[in-house]
Amino acid sequence: MRQKRMAAISLDPGLSLKYIGKDDTQHPSAVIEEIEGLIRVYKDGDVERPQIVPFVTSASLELGVTSKDVVIDKFTNIWARFYVPNVCHGKLPLLVYFHGGGFCVGSAAWSCYHEFLARLSAKANCLIMSVNYRLAPENPLPAAYEDGLRALIWLKQQGLRGDSEWWSRLSDFSKIFLAGDSAGANIAHNVATRVGSNHGIEAMALKPLSLKGNILIQPFFGGEVRTHSENYMVQSPRSALSLAASDTYWRLALPAGANRDHSWCNPLSKGSSKLEDIRLLPALVCISEMDILKDRNLEFCTALNRAGKRVEYVMYKGVGHAFQVLSTTQLSQTRTLEMVAHIKAFIS
Image (tube, helix red, strand yellow):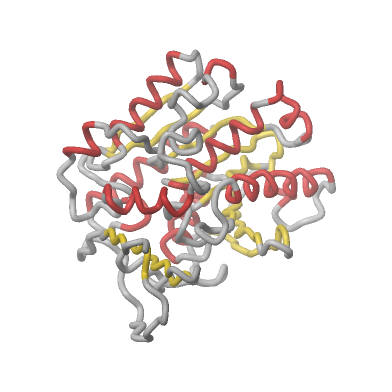
């Protein structure tokens, strides 16, 4: 019988995570995996996700943008939330954004993402298409990557139709960027890797879209061999990711039988394609100093550089994982403004 494994994340006043209501129902099956407050997986296959972050509609906030939801694939329930600055001068770059949550939790409708992406759209003067992809463990990888590619193909179809949609009239389809935070950054990287494989066949099939860059915020990678920061980083209470939670996410997200050296988790493992052999987009990697993923993110940047890929990274001092969406401290707000400025410079 499989024993229950439980990981915990710390919740403090500096985080905007909070419990909304309480589920006291008794489930007849045993819990086999759990990240306390975020996800509970039962032996019979049922999955519970407590509503720890409010879900908001596209019209919930006035943050200098117009926001609407669109359906990408009604059969798999993939949809996206668009953000368009209210003040536009000409056509704008478009960011295809994937939210974080260890592939297992999160939503494009989470209030923290709605607020962050609305502000990013307004301040960086870009359109954003925030993709709501399928979650593990019900839909293990590569489902999220497939949804990312499906979103790009849908976007291509919109580009071929011209200015038929309210947002497409302002979109420069020759300036598309893939972006995401945590697991979403992993998705952005792996989607870009798929597009860059097969000698650019995928890239040709996406015309008139032209992918210009990858914006990877605290990319969620792993490996069987621990890095120094994974082993010894003193966890800030503002960090939303512990090592135990990270391991649980990977157990739930990876295909059955795979370990953390699978290429989707560890792009630098022996079983992964050589970075030199892949046509990768220029990348901006945003790293948090207090994140357990810090060293793994730095190793990734070093490997990209050695492979001759264009990469720049920024280290955000004194803040932890997902600070830009989950932490409300003054320092985090300051660092978030810095991040927005770096993203704006990169897409410009």
